[in-house]
Length: 559
Image (cartoon, rainbow, N blue to C red):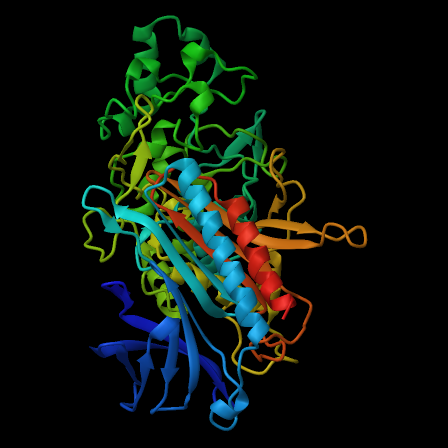
């Protein structure tokens, strides 16, 4: 947090034989001239403090736990605090981050900030916020622009923003925990856990949908696009018929969602858009006021803007449970957020408690104290305002009100970049932890479990995108083919696109087992985690996150 341009709270990182690498937040308790005093009180009541001299950004600290030189890198709302000193300046047993590492990190931060600024400039985003960790250490976070345009409030790293489909990786983690505890079998028909979900047929033959298929988008359950029969499509000959058909297919949603002129502008433009038809008729497509060449993500679908409040997960299933399948289960990849609502119903059955209660317990276990369901009535400190571009004027405007209770599991949570990084590091730790060779506590998930989540399913590939879907995660895995050419890649990630928000969470695992300048001696987690969020919809962030991950990964490898 920054007050009058100066940090109100900082994080000190140091290392000792007794504690290993440790990070701890210190709150500013006094300020006199260029002297600042920061202190931390532990749970046992003991306190530590340091006094700083802020000339030229160099922080001299001492009097509490050690003495030495610490550089606090911050500009606007960016912060990075790393120890840099010779062994004679630190107390006995302390280790230091190498000089080259600090210099390389500063270069990575500068270039990463340029990438964020470029995204902001190219898309006209109000605000953008990012965070990065290396080997489990949160070494940088940054915020650019505004969280509230009308009142000119700056964006900070503490702001809470919709994470949209990143909710899926949170959901699959909760389900995986139940799977480990033998509470469910992901290869059994979903009806064994959710009897109210109708059995499905394909070409007049009964088919089985499993939880595993739901997690990899192979169930054949539709996304937001409503599937209708060819007979209904051929009926569309006039605006009055179109409106009647729209009422038939979307009545329960439209009754609770009075659209503004910039969203769902006319019921007469809302018609049957069927994936059974190879070519759309422009007079019979689902429209949200966006022209065909301006479609961005899911913003062209009526259900994306639902305002209906669902009190229970079982009620949310009513949106799609009686609709026909788009594909035969297990044969074709079809991204479906609705399928994840069914996943949440499976979780409720296995855990024998409400889905949101299961998620709250998991967030507490993982230390995600600022991750919570996106509930409009709830007072959420540091909640960012959300924006979109007008389809008519192209000017910035407030995003419309929506209720995401129809898709908690697939796109209904909010978070901060720091919470997302904490979660990513916990998953990376679980992936790399080995009980036989690693000291320390076990991961939240077993290594075997997360390896299955991160294993690409070959059939679950989008023809226009790199990589494949695993279970809840997108995986990009490419070996290096030639010397001195494109290096190998291993990224796991998930992006998010909500009404008024865009996001990405990416993990670049390092499996080389090399010691790092942080002094962990190859202990997990090893790799780089990147989280980026924007308070405007329609912004693609995956390539930017990948570039930032490479910058910081090179920081470690070059040191």
